[in-house]
Image (tube, rainbow, N blue to C red; front, side, top):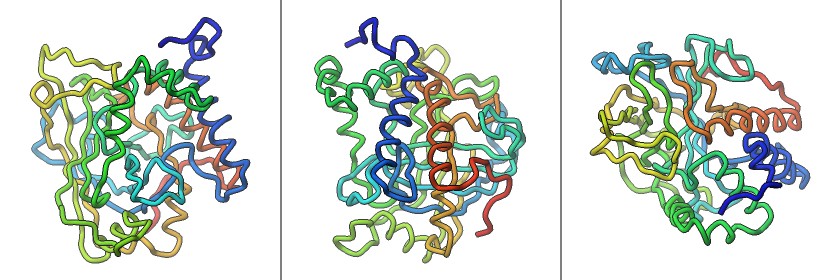
Length: 332
C-alpha cells in the first residue's frame, strides 16, 4: 500500500520517521518512568566487550578506503536484542552488534562531534531488512504505532515473512553471524555490504532456564577464553545489478562474494566488571559516524541519519549525561 496525499511520510519521510521513533515511541517508554531511559531500538543489552580490529595486510587495495585504510583499531562492541529490556531471551528477538572504533582519522559524517577520532559499524543477525525504502519504513512504523500493521501485511506478505525469519534462535552472540543489511560506499570500490562471521561455535553455556541466557553466555565465554570474528566485505560482481535501495533484496554470494579484510579479536575479559555495563549503555552508535569514503547508502540510511542522533540526545538528556562522543576508549 502507499500513503495518501495527507500522509506525513509522503511530505517528509525522514522527519516523520524520526518523530515516530523518538517523539512517539521512545518518549512513551520514557514517560512510563523506567530509568535509565532506553534507546529507541535494540534496548536489551547482553553486554559490551573490548576488542581489537586487525586489518589483513593482504586485503585488496580497492577496499583500503576510509576506516579500512589503517592497520588496527581498539574497539568496544555492544551486543543487544531488539526486544524489551526485561524480555526473556527465549523470545528470540533480532540481535544487533554495534562496534565503536577508536583512533580513526576524522572527520566523519556524524552530526555530533564529527571531529572525534571514532567510527561506528552496526550489523544484525539477518541479511535483509523487512521493508525496502525509507518511505516504506515510515509508513510501516506509522501503521504499527496505530495498531494497523495488518494493513501493511495485506499488500506486503514478504515483510511478515522476513520479520518471522529475523526472530531466530542463536546459541550465543559470539557464534551468530551478522550483516550490515544496508550498503555503504567503499572508496572507488563502489557499494558494498559487511558481514561478521564467527570463528567459534559450541552451544549456549548459560544455566538452563536463564532468562538472560545470551548475557550469561557472553560473560562465561569471555571469562574463560578469547573469541574472534572474520570481518568481510561483500562487493557485487560487475554487471550483477544488485539494488542499493531495495533492502528486502538479498545480495547472493554468487553475485557478490565476501572477501575477508580483518579480524575482530576479543581478548579474555570480565564483561561484568564494575561500570562496564553503564559504559555500554551510555555509548551512542550511529550509522553516519563514518568517513565520507564509507558513506551509508540508500533512503533507509537517510532516515537513520536523523533518527539515531535524535534518539541518543533524548536518552542522554533524561539520564543526565553529556550528549558527547568519547575521544578515547574506556580502559578494559
